[in-house]
Structure formats: C-alpha cells, structure tokens
Image 1 (cartoon, helix red, strand yellow):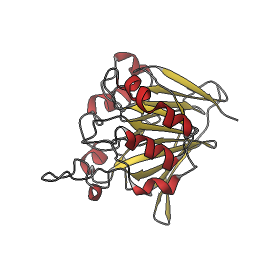
Image 2: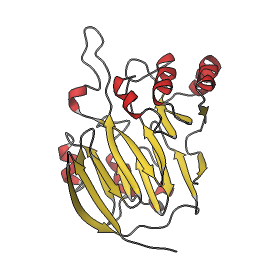
Image 3: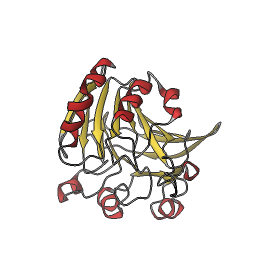
Image 4: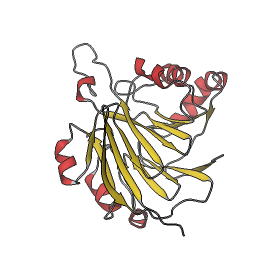
Length: 254
C-alpha cells in the first residue's frame, strides 16, 4: 500500500496557513471515487487513499473500522452534528472541520473553523466551504440564518468535484459554481427548512451538475420526487442516482 504525507493548508481570505503533516490510510480502489450515502444528509467519500465524511450521524458499529481522514460538519443541528459519530471516526490524524461559529466544537476536536470561501487542502482533496442558508417564513426566524455563516462544502479530488448542499434553500450564490460540479448532493425536504420540489430542479439548472444524489429524504420521497420532476432533471442533462442509506456508488476518475 502506498503511504504519503498530507499537508493541510487553510486559505482564509488571501492568507495560506500550513497546519500539519498527516499520513493517510488506503481506502479506495485505484482510479475510482466511491460515495456511500449514510443516514439523513450523511455522506462518505473514499478516493486517493482518503476517507472524507460529511455530516455523519447514527453510524452502526462497523464504521469504527472506517476511520476518517477528514470530517466536515455543515451546522450544529442534531440531524447533521452528532458527537458520538464524530468520536467513533477519530484517529490521531483526523481533520475536523466546522463552521467557525461552532467554536466550542472547534475547540473540543482541535478542529478548523471555516466560513464560506475558506479552503482546506487535505492530501489531494481541496475542500471549500460554501454558502448554506434558508429564508425566514413570515412570523418566524430563519432556521438556517445567512448571518450564522453555516456551510455547504465543495470537495475536489483530482479534477472530480462534489457539492454537498446540506439544508440550503435555492440561493443566488449557486450561480457562482455553475458548471464546476460533477456530483451534487441535494436535500429533498422538508420545504420549510430546505429546498424542495421544483426548487431542486432550479438548483440543478443553476449548478449544472452531471449527477444528482438526493439526501435528507423520508421513505418513498426519492421515487415520488422523480415521478414528478424526473423529466425536468433529464432535460437539464443531469443523471439522478437514487441511493438507499448505506448504499454506495463508484465513479471512474479519468
């Protein structure tokens, strides 16, 4: 197995700060990137001797043997941040990334606090925090306020790019990443707290990913969504990949 050093670089504004050197553990088949859908919005990405988790929760005990090279948390809601899952995935070299306003968690896990626009280099993976927010319904505060600077994430590995939207609504900032995304993980609902229904079609039209993988869905929601909106997804030249929880799909890297 090929082992090497990982240089962790954090870009904040125009400043680049080298943090530490790590040694990865081999996890993937050569020349491929494997994604595994976890519970709720959780995703595991394995490629290039790296294992990256996004919002892992409710993991079964088998994941204790699948330690993380990096864990990315989008915001502190309990269906996205779970300390027991993070603890299970830790190894000495795990890089833990949180929105900067999760300062207590950054301190507990000796983590990295980010705001939209910050980038982190973990081995061959370039991880960029992006915008994630929802809008206030009349009479209520937004469940994911823009000013909290909670995050979605863009993960680029050897020219192949994932986008994990977390709980975001359809926001104007998506046009900034149009044509840059190979695989978009987008929530199906509920519409009061995430994008839903035709909003998802609009997001796909804005981002223009090659593939769309639903996250944050209830039983039967994927099939119902595709029955109603599948033609719109196909018209956008995007392929929908419907995965069950803990099901994997591999992409070939050119």
